[in-house]
Length: 407
Image 1 (cartoon, rainbow, N blue to C red):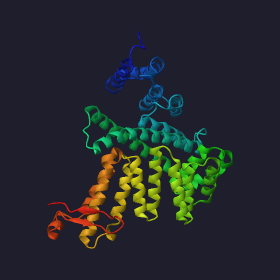
Image 2: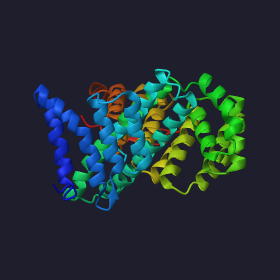
Image 3: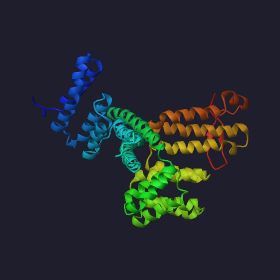
Image 4: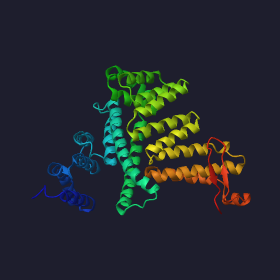
């Protein structure tokens, strides 16, 4: 009777209907399934705003997810409902599972040879949704970094902050999981063999569109297609149209490929300087760190990874990068077999840091740490050497030290 009285009508109403669908008799289930889509329409009409913020995208995406979960519409109808949510209110359409299924329904239509879903549209939709994932990840990182800095300063967290930390960890895991699933789907289609002809075919039509050029260059770079001559065409067009942090970064890649490392470094530094958003700056720095790692310039790679962490303390992938480089250098650091293996303690420490600052990496980072700890000297080795508590210094590029654990 009072559909606009309180949001609780809808939050509790949703729970009740879902419970009836899950646990009710066949008759109750059928009735609840008929009601639930109408219910979401009423929610969107009567309570589209909560605490002065639109929740329309969230509500409509809930409807689309219900259609998917309970088989209440064909693939195109489900996709169109997700698309309506994203088009009308992308800001509140932030549920990682819903975002993933938004793309998955589009991909499934593509695999069914739906004439309305071309390869070009599929890649565009992937870029659009992955950019939304990235935006949600950055928003979460900003909140997490505030808490992380407080913890590192030794300041106790309030009960609210401790609760928020747990929520951020859950959300970070969800974003990481569904984004990985998204990437796994597109990886089947986004090969250099598919990308290069597609982008060549559409280049003339889009060479004045900076967003299209950025996305095409980004996709070719991430799929290691930057050796193709067409990558040069893309990058030059982008830089001429809109000199930016992105275009400078890609010019750095081109110079790297051409063996001009000093010129490449100049463009990389220009890319960092042009980027004003600290989280995007961190992302560029990590990309550059990875490029140096691949080139075998580990000290330079670590330097850029640490710079990335200075802008985004929760960037666990930077710690994992350093961890992996330490581990791969074990045989080249240390003058004895024991000291060489001691490098793995440092590698494990970096992996543990990755797990601590980035919950989405916790599983893989802890697994990595355990693996490296297994390669480090054992308690028996320490007892045999009689060097517990001693400091081992590394004179290689690592230039650090580690204290042998006590027995």
